Image (cartoon, rainbow, N blue to C red; front, side, top):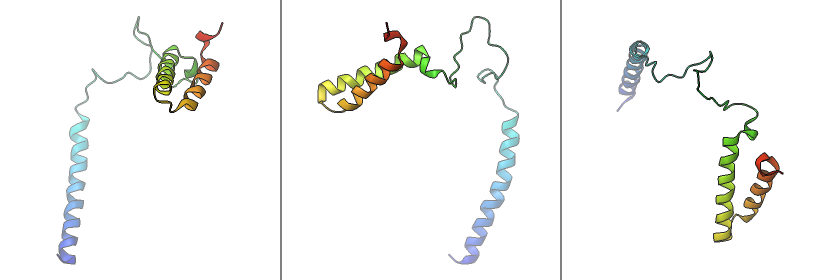
Length: 105
């Protein structure tokens, strides 16, 4: 393969991409499925419960804390079974005790 063949190949790829990209955008723009698209803005539907997943108050979210409790329990179980990662299990339990309101009197 010489320089001329490489140049022709590169040009062919660039011409193909310059045709395929706009064509793909045009064909894809007309086919939007609104049944699965998330709604942005507006109020939630009546009776629907929503969670603010990007809220700075995620540490007090009951679902988040439940997941953390399951993780800490699994980490402690692993520590008891294998004797490994016990420092991490203790640190996780300490953090959970400090941040979980349901365990406080």
